[in-house]
Length: 259
Ligand SMILES: NC(=O)C1=CN([C@@H]2O[C@H](COP(=O)(O)OP(=O)(O)OC[C@H]3O[C@@H](n4cnc5c(N)ncnc54)[C@H](O)[C@@H]3O)[C@@H](O)[C@H]2O)C=CC1
Ligand SMILES: Nc1nc(O)c(N)c(N[C@@H]2O[C@H](COP(=O)(O)O)[C@@H](O)[C@H]2O)n1
Image (cartoon, rainbow, N blue to C red; front, side, top):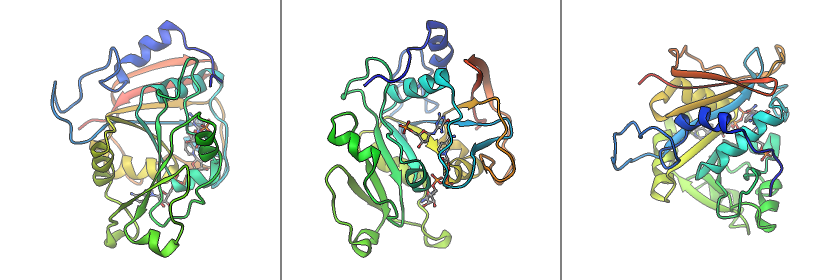
């Protein structure tokens, strides 16, 4: 299942403090030592350009991470129970969402979670193919209550559909806390949030308290004005506990959001 190179011991030491508490060398969860966490530990992580863009155009998969920072992403996947993305990314990128770090077994795979309130995702593609090949876990698709009946998609092999109520005032939106509570109830201890733009920007603007760690890869390129930006609607105070490290040609910044 390996497709990436192993990171150096210096790279691992750099990342350790930002990993979820169940991992070695990580900080205690902000709820306090031994606290029964209602929400999973969350890591917000993505790759952007020097102008803060995450893809060349809406719906366009864009490789920004170099081989070393790609390894970093797969190392993070190894250390999380679940990876969460929005349906925009599922449709645009057709991602695999499994862990391809050296030595990763099926038991070590993260659970892909696709936030899809209106059931737009076709429930096929790479992520489902990998389940069939025994290289990834069955994705959970979070759809709005009652939407499944209207969409009439039914349960497909290799995908589990979970219904969650949406908030009517903002259209088909989930309250993020309810999303993460649902995951915690299903045994998820920590979640890696990979994007895309709407998910990143919404969480940064409105739900900073939910984010425990931030790990961003900055690639040495500019994507330009038409590109999709990771840029919340409001300013966000500077991160704390900030550290930078070079991974190949990319810079990786880690930190925490002030609470
Ligand atoms: N460079 C990187 O690291 C990454 C880049 N991307 C890029 O991001 C782009 C996709 O971004 P977007 O189009 O913004 O899609 P997205 O992946 O953020 O999904 C947006 C959709 O997610 C759902 N959603 C978001 N917040 C929700 C909430 N609170 N409740 C319920 N549903 C919610 C909605 O259906 C919304 O339309 C793609 O071009 C992809 O390549 C995606 C992930 C990582
Ligand atoms: N870390 C990172 N760097 C990039 O350059 C990226 N484009 C992304 N995208 C995210 O990774 C997903 C692809 O996963 P697979 O390799 O197919 O398993 C994609 O959907 C984005 O979430 N990430």
